[in-house]
Length: 257
Image (tube, rainbow, N blue to C red; front, side, top):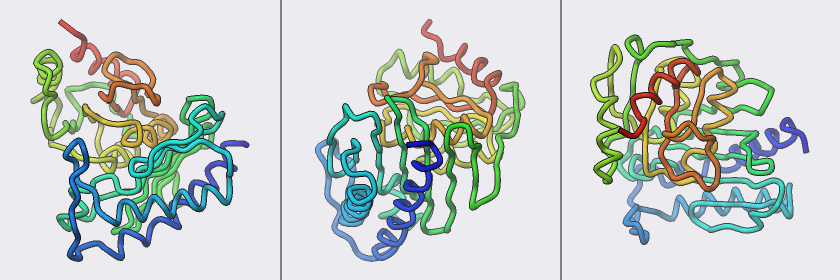
C-alpha cells in the first residue's frame, strides 16, 4: 500500500473516532487507574474499539498496537499505532486539547501520522513524501535555527533518573520564551510553526509515533535524546525541533556529561 492509501484510511479512522470522546466530554465519568497509575475511562476504551473495528474492515491482517486494547501481529509489514485519547488527564478535567493519534509504520518506519483534536475540530496529518497539513491546508515549521531565538516547551516534570534530570535541566531557561507543555497538541503546533522546540520523556510508542511523520514532513526534526530515530522500541525520551539545525544544537545540551 502507498502512503496516500494508508493516509486515506488513517483519516477515515480518525473521523470515525472523533465523535466518541465528545459524547463523554465534560460529563461525569468513572476514572480507572491502570497498572502504571495513569487514568483511563470508558471513553478511551470505546474510542479505540471503534478505531480497531474500522481497521479490521479496511486492512484486515495489518498489525496494531493500541494503548487500551493491546497488540497484535507486530511482525506485519504495516503496523498501526493508536492512542484513542492522548491527554486523558486533560479530557477528564474538561480541558479541550486532548487528541486521538494514529501512526502507520512500514517495516518499523513511520510513514503516516494523524493528530486529531476532537473538541476544537482540528486535524493535523502527514504522509511520507506528501507534506504536512492542518484542516486541509499545508503547514511548515517556523524555520528557527538557533536556540536563543526559540520558543521552547518542556514536559511538565523532569525525569525521575537524576542523570537524565540533569540533562533535561540544561534546556531550562533557554530560548526567547519557555512554557510547560503536555500531550501531542504541542507537537502539532510545532509542525504548524507556532513554537520551535519540545522536549519530553517517559513516553510510550503510541504517544510519539504519530508525531514523527508530521514533524518531519513539515520541515522539522524529531528523535530520541541521543539523536536516534523513534520506533516501537524507543526508550521514550523525545526531542522535536523546527529545523535540523535547532535540533542539533539542543542535542548538544542533552548529551551525557
